[in-house]
Image 1 (cartoon, rainbow, N blue to C red):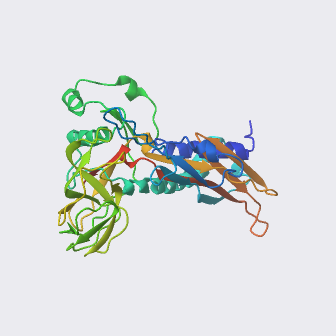
Image 2 (image 1 turned 90 degrees about the horizontal axis):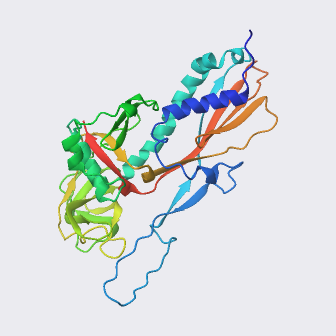
Length: 386
């Protein structure tokens, strides 16, 4: 029996299936904002303001101390913009559309969608540079203990669920999850252990480590996302993690000293020497948003993770609400030979084909419009390694 001609809808759905299988990072993060953009023409525009959870302080005593609920204030909202359009362009003939869907998928779609998926995943994984928490394990292979150290950092940041890391380590040899082993996963899935789903992803790049050494704080009492330094030499790269002597993290709710240094990430390249380094999170020493025991002292030493001029690999531990990813419906053109737009698991994809009379070909474009944002960086942790 002769094959029927593949429809644009069938081709688009198959392309989405391949993309969904290959994008294991964006498939594992928050996708609840897809519905806000997945309307014809993206009617809400290309931006969405997302409210973050409010923070409050606890009163002691009978006297009322009312606190305003201001979700519009700086730091309480983040803006998700869906404005990145990427696609892959192909040529295929009507004869090729007479192939079975499996053959067409292998010969035409899979090579094209693989490069598109790689580009989208690499874009989204760039958010790892905004994560300030890191287990410093540079130059070493990842161990189970280091993995649990990362889990402990997430627990201390109130990342659910809060299992006991020491208990998991002690009992790790006693459990064998047959149900998990038999489950079908996305491409690159390795299974589940210690409360994590493990995936391989080749698009998680290493962190470049600049030449920066011997940095100290210039002046006491500093707060905010700008840190004035002096006597440091060598550049700092965006994404490098630093700690400041005497500046400890506090429990997010009780504000009690955890005894562990607060970590900060450099958010913009810094050329070196005296000046101002941009950091995240901002240093907050009081109120509902307090995250440290106090401001840095004058001449407090700054520790930079890693070895100068030596890049290090990274793994990423995260709760799904640390990041978000969304796509928007692209407008369907009129007067073309062949077109379709489909949505699968929130990802909207459009395919359009037109006839080129000059070359006697059918140029075809396949597009995705998307955006991504780090929502709550405290719900993620980097694990430095070889």
